[in-house]
Length: 393
Image (cartoon, rainbow, N blue to C red; front, side, top):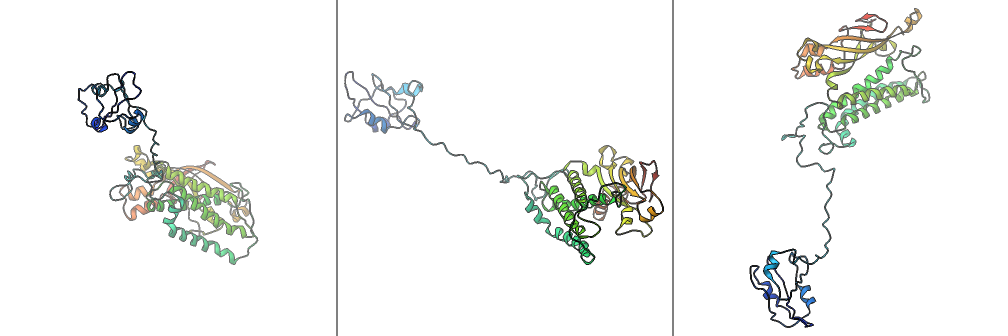
């Protein structure tokens, strides 16, 4: 220790003590065998000396008294016998709280080239490591895509302004009853359209935000908002109105997109598909004939299961779906009863058949499109009426 301050031998019966010269004490060696120290300066008050000397650990005054003087050797060896005085109180240093929003310097979700390192599509970079952590920052990366969708819906709805309109109103269109216009086919289309838009937006967001957490929810919210805004044009048509039934189905389609893109394995195993069966006009753009062409299904894909990837079952999908028939005005006039078809079936996975597992360029994009569309006449189905079907009726 650089400093050892000790003082003071007291003589019996004296009221004052002689003070040890501080310079002499400070220069003493710890190994000194001296058993006492004689004072070399004038007498002074003990409290003055003690207050001038730091303790052994540098925290406060040290005053050690004995009958025969100050025993340096004993003090050096026995801390308990000659402990330091109480240290002066010191305010504890304030520890700085870490900023939870600060991204760590080492980001385990990105490689040296700045590319995201994720094993599965449904995996996302947590907020603490993500490059885009909130709705606004994620939305800003797809402003062009949103502008294009808004332009498309504006052009589609704007045509209604040039036809007969009425004051804005709400209308309960029902769900899947036989008394509805298309037996629920229009409701399924609302769910599918919102689902498809959410999927497109999520694919873009997954890339532009580097798979930042929450991108699937942002895509679903934006798709729902676009469809809800488009519904406003129905509110001014004389024979329709703003349908909350459609809004519910929009939300259902958007939520399925979230489920598919956030739960590992779902996107690889399950698809929500639309099949359009040609009619005498090949394709009807609007009206009941438009809805009559449509088949909706959830497809469980054989190629999504590890145990089936190297078997012929990877080319097949198991289907559960719905469509309606006999609801055209011509059908009703002919006395036919409107029919709802809930079916199970087996369909060909045309994307797997045509493009296999090594997909690049065009084949990769074509296979992705076929994950949302089922080609007509590529399925065999058994419906709730016991009919086996593969074509139009």
